[in-house]
Image 1 (cartoon, rainbow, N blue to C red):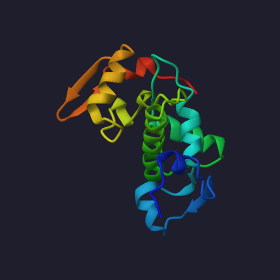
Image 2: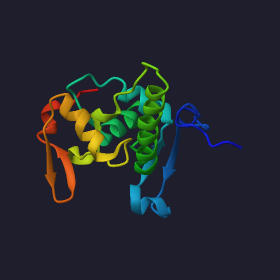
Image 3: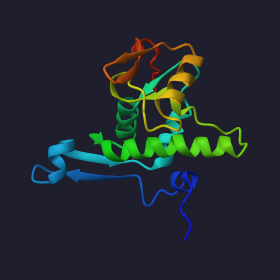
Image 4: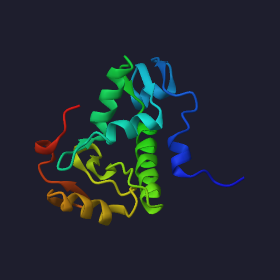
Length: 157
């Protein structure tokens, strides 16, 4: 059976979104906390990421908070959020490479604290290039890269 494309993964919700309770005695509570945890569908991340206009930015934390409120959950699963944001980025790249003009500006979504995402297509180099093309300044802290003063460019959902 051939490997699924990123666009197939993006559009396969597999019963998501779902909200599940994470209790004190649950192993996940140590990592994520207790309460109602949302596992959003991959396409929901794409829908939010498409809304970010040129020159603006958002972090994965802001997207997770927005989706949790949308679904009346206390928080959103960090692990699936990271996976699904990377699926969005790679699905957008697949569409662009096939000649489609339906692109999700994934590069406007940063990790916590304004950090660039090394897992995006083309790695840090391409992420940096795309952000600099939109006027953002990138700074290096240790081995990691961040958008300088990213808070000033945050998009309000």
